[in-house]
Length: 396
Ligand code: PLP
Image (cartoon, rainbow, N blue to C red; front, side):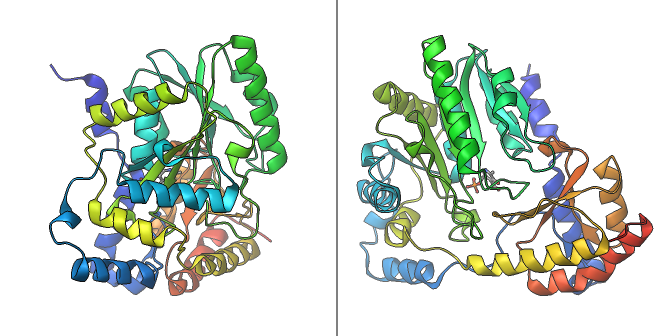
């Protein structure tokens, strides 16, 4: 017998990948210039030159055996040190190298942390709209996702809604800012209120509640401050990714960083290390750990995304579409002209526009437009969006 849960996970359609594959087929059929693929969040900005320069240098000059050898499971000490030093330079001394675990992207960090921190039956609070994989990582280990709404219209955190959802079984709260799919950056005030509430609740219940801060888009902020949550709350673990910051999603690099003041630090560290082991993690890529060591503070051209955002938001708002103006990440969350965004996204395909319905993000009346695309794709897509606006009778 197979696990029905795993079969269900395997068979659950990945709408984003299906749309992206469909866009690929349409590009072959009618030419890439006629297809407007806003489905997937894969950076179109090239990796910064320092990344390739580091690779070339390593491949040319480093010891050819050592460069491909296993590293320690949590990563090479130099890489963990470089990451801890970078955090200290930017935010203060919150993390020591022993609290850093180099992972296969933020996904690897999330999966190991959720497995490491939860027991079956524990509750994990997730705010919607949310990254869809949180549900899988939570449920796979027997924990229970508790999905909590954010503030109507702004998608900012609502401490009252959290208070209504938090229980003695709450073990983890996941936050993701800048947010996929809403592009919202949670404000310092709301974060202070949320972490204050968590601190009060863990005192009341007499056990820690962990904050898992999923931050693949930390560097993709267009002016808004992205607060560093270890400043606010000691029981914080940060899941970080170089997929977007360095435009290397296929290389699978990221880290889990545990605050040095975290409750039960040694147990948290060992439980996460044990979880990684149970998930078959041996170590992250040796070559790329060395690249990260050298490029730890390098960031891809974020301004390109900001210009894409401005072009897309002003173009779509002029046609009568409404959205929350995104302050970060490279996603625009658009209010669907139809109550069910699936219907709109289906219609959009008729105009060769691929956008993602909000259902799997927990908000079915919105849809996601990924603007990590070539500028021309946005420019050329405008007449198609205009036809959609006309079809649905939108007015500025
Ligand atoms: N978390 C969020 C909110 C994401 O949007 C993504 C990827 O798009 C991930 C995690 C996983 O990213 P990674 O490539 O680092 O595994």
